[in-house]
Image (cartoon, rainbow, N blue to C red; front, side, top):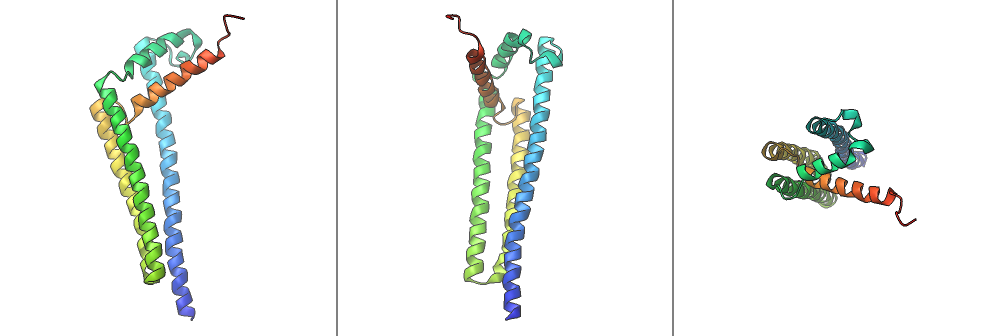
Length: 181
């Protein structure tokens, strides 16, 4: 009786442990992505600063707003092939991320199913979800660097820049006073 209970507890520990490690890994990836995003933002501001001859701390000022908007619109235009390729890579990377998540959920569900139907010894296979997550993440990082090498942009960077530019212009128009008043 005690041996059977310990086996079940060990199976639960394997599954719960794998899920906890997976969430910790995901949190680490998110922290790394946030750091990388901030680094890329600073790099983009430096690029704008150098190209337009504006001091880096003044790039976001009202004085240079129209120059910055024109530069960003030209640099990330969907008319440029490298930007279209970057956009395509962004969609591929997003699909890859979803596929990785689906595979992890599928493996976890299969492990839980086989653990409950065939025996607790199958629970050790729950650790595969951590390996799968790591493998998908490494492949995504390699793909991002390949995209950066080919296009000068990270996957989806051009689309994100156009989206932010459009939102900024929309927000600016909503803030400007009405000429009719």
